[in-house]
Length: 219
Image (tube, helix red, strand yellow):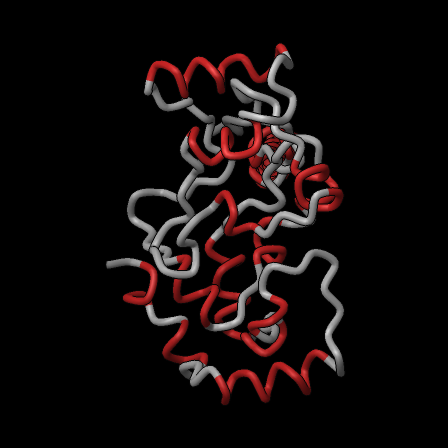
Protein backbone atom coordinates (compact mmCIF):
# COMPACT_ATOMS: atom_id res chain seq x y z
CA UNK A 1 0.00 0.00 0.00
CA UNK A 2 1.39 3.38 -0.98
CA UNK A 3 2.13 5.96 1.73
CA UNK A 4 -0.93 8.11 2.42
CA UNK A 5 0.98 11.25 3.50
CA UNK A 6 4.24 12.54 2.05
CA UNK A 7 7.39 12.42 4.19
CA UNK A 8 7.32 16.14 4.82
CA UNK A 9 3.96 15.83 6.61
CA UNK A 10 5.63 15.15 9.97
CA UNK A 11 7.71 18.30 9.59
CA UNK A 12 4.65 20.35 8.64
CA UNK A 13 2.72 18.97 11.63
CA UNK A 14 5.53 19.90 14.04
CA UNK A 15 5.79 23.41 12.60
CA UNK A 16 2.00 23.82 12.81
CA UNK A 17 1.92 22.74 16.46
CA UNK A 18 4.81 25.09 17.27
CA UNK A 19 3.06 27.95 15.48
CA UNK A 20 -0.16 27.35 17.45
CA UNK A 21 1.77 27.23 20.74
CA UNK A 22 3.60 30.47 19.91
CA UNK A 23 0.36 32.11 18.83
CA UNK A 24 -1.38 31.13 22.07
CA UNK A 25 1.63 32.33 24.09
CA UNK A 26 1.52 35.67 22.25
CA UNK A 27 -2.22 36.00 22.98
CA UNK A 28 -1.67 35.18 26.66
CA UNK A 29 1.26 37.61 26.86
CA UNK A 30 -0.82 40.32 25.20
CA UNK A 31 -3.66 39.83 27.68
CA UNK A 32 -1.26 39.99 30.64
CA UNK A 33 0.31 43.16 29.22
CA UNK A 34 -3.14 44.68 28.73
CA UNK A 35 -4.47 44.04 32.23
CA UNK A 36 -1.35 45.69 33.69
CA UNK A 37 -1.37 48.62 31.28
CA UNK A 38 -2.86 52.08 31.99
CA UNK A 39 -5.41 51.40 29.25
CA UNK A 40 -7.00 48.83 31.56
CA UNK A 41 -5.96 49.95 35.06
CA UNK A 42 -6.42 53.70 34.42
CA UNK A 43 -3.43 54.27 36.72
CA UNK A 44 -2.13 57.80 36.25
CA UNK A 45 -5.10 58.74 34.05
CA UNK A 46 -6.93 61.88 35.12
CA UNK A 47 -10.63 61.28 35.82
CA UNK A 48 -12.78 64.19 34.59
CA UNK A 49 -14.74 65.86 37.37
CA UNK A 50 -17.66 68.31 37.29
CA UNK A 51 -15.51 70.76 39.27
CA UNK A 52 -11.71 70.91 39.05
CA UNK A 53 -10.23 70.27 42.48
CA UNK A 54 -6.44 70.81 42.70
CA UNK A 55 -5.36 68.52 45.52
CA UNK A 56 -1.83 69.90 45.36
CA UNK A 57 -3.01 73.44 46.13
CA UNK A 58 -5.38 72.47 48.93
CA UNK A 59 -2.94 70.07 50.59
CA UNK A 60 0.54 71.42 49.87
CA UNK A 61 -0.21 75.13 49.74
CA UNK A 62 -3.10 75.44 52.19
CA UNK A 63 -2.11 72.55 54.44
CA UNK A 64 -5.55 70.95 54.59
CA UNK A 65 -5.74 67.56 56.31
CA UNK A 66 -7.34 64.73 54.32
CA UNK A 67 -10.08 64.54 56.94
CA UNK A 68 -11.21 68.10 56.24
CA UNK A 69 -12.95 66.82 53.10
CA UNK A 70 -13.02 63.06 53.71
CA UNK A 71 -14.74 63.26 57.07
CA UNK A 72 -14.84 60.07 59.09
CA UNK A 73 -12.29 58.14 57.06
CA UNK A 74 -10.83 56.94 60.37
CA UNK A 75 -14.27 56.10 61.75
CA UNK A 76 -16.12 54.63 58.79
CA UNK A 77 -15.75 51.75 56.37
CA UNK A 78 -15.61 54.16 53.43
CA UNK A 79 -13.97 57.49 52.66
CA UNK A 80 -16.88 59.86 52.23
CA UNK A 81 -16.92 62.60 49.61
CA UNK A 82 -17.34 66.16 50.91
CA UNK A 83 -20.79 67.74 50.83
CA UNK A 84 -21.11 71.08 49.10
CA UNK A 85 -21.29 72.77 52.50
CA UNK A 86 -17.66 71.78 53.09
CA UNK A 87 -16.57 73.52 49.91
CA UNK A 88 -18.65 76.57 50.68
CA UNK A 89 -17.18 76.91 54.17
CA UNK A 90 -14.30 78.57 52.31
CA UNK A 91 -15.72 79.46 48.93
CA UNK A 92 -18.57 81.52 50.30
CA UNK A 93 -15.81 84.09 50.92
CA UNK A 94 -12.93 83.00 48.66
CA UNK A 95 -13.02 82.93 44.82
CA UNK A 96 -16.73 83.72 44.98
CA UNK A 97 -16.96 84.60 41.28
CA UNK A 98 -14.63 81.97 39.84
CA UNK A 99 -16.42 80.45 36.84
CA UNK A 100 -15.14 76.90 37.45
CA UNK A 101 -16.80 76.92 40.88
CA UNK A 102 -20.25 77.79 39.55
CA UNK A 103 -21.42 74.14 39.92
CA UNK A 104 -20.50 74.36 43.61
CA UNK A 105 -22.49 77.54 44.09
CA UNK A 106 -25.44 76.07 42.17
CA UNK A 107 -25.30 72.89 44.26
CA UNK A 108 -25.32 74.92 47.46
CA UNK A 109 -28.21 77.08 46.30
CA UNK A 110 -30.31 74.18 44.97
CA UNK A 111 -29.46 71.59 47.61
CA UNK A 112 -28.45 69.13 44.87
CA UNK A 113 -25.26 67.13 45.55
CA UNK A 114 -22.39 67.37 43.09
CA UNK A 115 -22.00 64.12 41.17
CA UNK A 116 -18.29 63.42 41.53
CA UNK A 117 -16.75 60.69 39.37
CA UNK A 118 -15.19 57.81 41.31
CA UNK A 119 -11.41 57.48 41.02
CA UNK A 120 -10.84 54.26 42.98
CA UNK A 121 -13.19 51.31 43.14
CA UNK A 122 -13.28 47.67 44.17
CA UNK A 123 -15.52 44.83 42.97
CA UNK A 124 -18.67 44.21 44.99
CA UNK A 125 -17.27 40.90 46.23
CA UNK A 126 -14.34 42.62 47.95
CA UNK A 127 -14.81 44.02 51.45
CA UNK A 128 -12.57 46.94 52.35
CA UNK A 129 -12.79 48.96 55.55
CA UNK A 130 -10.99 52.32 55.62
CA UNK A 131 -11.34 52.69 59.36
CA UNK A 132 -9.38 49.60 60.33
CA UNK A 133 -6.60 50.33 57.84
CA UNK A 134 -6.19 53.92 59.05
CA UNK A 135 -6.30 52.92 62.71
CA UNK A 136 -3.86 50.06 62.17
CA UNK A 137 -1.20 52.33 60.67
CA UNK A 138 -1.75 52.38 56.92
CA UNK A 139 -1.19 55.88 55.56
CA UNK A 140 -3.36 57.49 52.88
CA UNK A 141 -0.30 57.81 50.65
CA UNK A 142 0.25 54.03 50.67
CA UNK A 143 -2.82 53.40 48.54
CA UNK A 144 -3.64 56.80 47.06
CA UNK A 145 -0.15 58.05 46.25
CA UNK A 146 1.16 61.59 46.47
CA UNK A 147 -2.12 63.44 46.02
CA UNK A 148 -0.36 66.56 47.27
CA UNK A 149 1.43 66.74 43.90
CA UNK A 150 -1.66 66.20 41.71
CA UNK A 151 -3.75 68.89 40.07
CA UNK A 152 -6.43 66.27 39.43
CA UNK A 153 -7.01 63.13 41.47
CA UNK A 154 -5.73 60.07 39.63
CA UNK A 155 -5.59 56.40 40.49
CA UNK A 156 -2.17 55.72 42.02
CA UNK A 157 -2.41 51.94 41.73
CA UNK A 158 -4.78 49.25 40.59
CA UNK A 159 -5.94 47.01 43.37
CA UNK A 160 -5.25 43.50 42.17
CA UNK A 161 -5.64 40.80 44.79
CA UNK A 162 -1.84 40.58 44.86
CA UNK A 163 -1.71 44.27 45.83
CA UNK A 164 -3.65 43.52 48.99
CA UNK A 165 -2.02 40.18 49.83
CA UNK A 166 1.45 41.70 49.50
CA UNK A 167 0.62 44.15 52.29
CA UNK A 168 -1.25 41.57 54.35
CA UNK A 169 1.68 39.16 54.05
CA UNK A 170 4.25 41.78 55.05
CA UNK A 171 2.45 44.48 57.12
CA UNK A 172 5.68 45.68 58.75
CA UNK A 173 6.79 47.06 55.37
CA UNK A 174 3.88 49.48 55.18
CA UNK A 175 2.87 50.61 58.67
CA UNK A 176 3.55 54.06 60.07
CA UNK A 177 2.86 55.85 63.38
CA UNK A 178 -0.61 57.31 63.87
CA UNK A 179 0.86 60.81 63.92
CA UNK A 180 1.99 60.32 60.29
CA UNK A 181 -1.05 58.61 58.76
CA UNK A 182 -2.07 61.68 56.74
CA UNK A 183 1.46 62.87 55.90
CA UNK A 184 2.51 63.09 52.28
CA UNK A 185 6.13 62.26 51.48
CA UNK A 186 6.46 60.36 54.76
CA UNK A 187 9.93 59.17 55.78
CA UNK A 188 10.19 56.74 58.71
CA UNK A 189 12.21 57.86 61.74
CA UNK A 190 14.18 54.60 61.63
CA UNK A 191 14.55 51.60 59.33
CA UNK A 192 11.06 50.74 58.12
CA UNK A 193 11.34 47.04 58.95
CA UNK A 194 12.49 47.84 62.49
CA UNK A 195 9.76 50.41 63.00
CA UNK A 196 7.18 48.21 61.28
CA UNK A 197 7.93 45.26 63.54
CA UNK A 198 7.30 47.49 66.57
CA UNK A 199 4.06 48.82 65.13
CA UNK A 200 2.80 45.31 64.33
CA UNK A 201 2.95 44.61 68.06
CA UNK A 202 1.68 48.04 69.10
CA UNK A 203 -1.35 47.86 66.80
CA UNK A 204 -1.96 44.18 67.63
CA UNK A 205 -1.85 43.18 63.96
CA UNK A 206 -2.95 39.62 63.23
CA UNK A 207 -0.28 37.21 61.92
CA UNK A 208 0.08 37.05 58.11
CA UNK A 209 -1.47 33.59 57.85
CA UNK A 210 -4.69 35.07 59.27
CA UNK A 211 -4.48 38.32 57.31
CA UNK A 212 -4.41 36.43 54.00
CA UNK A 213 -7.36 34.24 54.89
CA UNK A 214 -10.08 34.54 52.23
CA UNK A 215 -12.70 35.63 54.77
CA UNK A 216 -10.75 38.81 55.58
CA UNK A 217 -11.66 40.41 52.24
CA UNK A 218 -14.44 38.18 50.90
CA UNK A 219 -17.48 38.11 53.17
